[in-house]
Image (cartoon, rainbow over all chains, first blue to last red):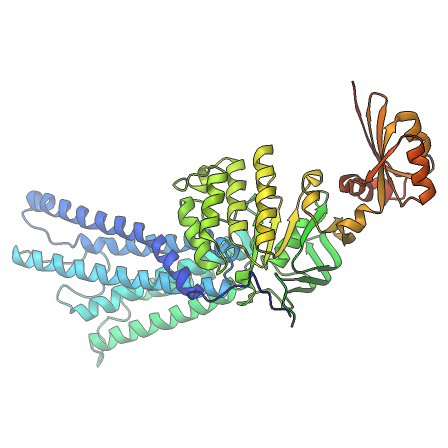
Length: 248
Length: 309
């Protein structure tokens, strides 16, 4: 081993932090556009429906739940497709990219879950002030009176798992190509399918003897957390073996 | 440990297969640190694959790749110091050029933003444009900008300048040489345009069908042959019986490249008959070495061109 003098890399900010900044910047425009559209659409639809029906009983904001999960899922796939090769070409390891992308996708999922919770609460407050009832047209687990913690327990894990599953799907496509990536979808999509499946079946929140909503929420969060950790570990392992192919 | 400007590269028995295709076949190779090495070879000879292995874009099927004495795969120490620029890009296509520069500058400790700005001006690149909107030539120029401004201890430029027009190519050669002299490092330059880059090269590696055909310093390689220029008849008489690598004719004047050294008597005879002797062009040697007929044991062919008066 030699020690070069003139051009050896010196000290610099952590590559993971640099990659994280770049990846968060990639999520930023989509985050802005998506939530502006949600707010504008809900604000426009509510008075229209109120004028027609005399009242509004559904949560328009709640409809963004499915959209948010799938947009994040797709964005994560694109993120891997665009940034993994460029990051390696820029002198980062795949491990660095995997760490940064997990934090970026997971953090964005967390943010979107919190944003949706806040908007649901705001919408609920508006409806109450106008004397309307609120129920969520989507299969949102907590009921109209559920606490902020129950809303967070349902919405945040869904978005985080959606984003991390997108990374896993994207990296497997990068690793094995289009045909095998598609054939592997039943496995790579499994984390999100598991959480959506249990969520929509309302398994975790169905009142059973001796189980409070709080306990059910905790089980739901813990289950989603385990699924996320397993998906993240698989993603990191696969990402570290990806070949950077020529694009021409 | 020794102090050297740049990373050295060692390949030991490296084989790379793609299905039934063998891109590299048991390659043993040393690239000296602190040199500009020309990586020459015909299409499909394995140049791009070799660059990809060195930059840890992929792992070899078998064998060992070492960069600065270590396996480069997922190596946190060597990764920021190895820069492979391919014609295909590997940039953020939908981000503006200035955002791309920020991206690469943040990832490479040796990146020089001021030099990058100079090169952007030199190649007339608009920082606000996006790589996806650039012409092939401008994309090549942007790749070169990143490759040179990164000042990585090991920079591999794989056919990056093929899309450039001639003035831009010569501007690139000048910029590369000037920056290399100011900031010595290891540069591997892969190209088909051997005549244009040979003045830059200190070492030469010739690949052919995935094998190393030749690895040598450029000066000693040039000394292995000679170009003979003069009246056609005198040249033909002088080179009779020698291995001819290439021939050019202009009217009654001929320039013939032959392989092998000359004795003092040969030199005296050439001068007595009015012939000029010069170094062997690497291009002629390359064509000769990689001629499929020579490789397959048939009669060696040599390049011949005729320029009509």
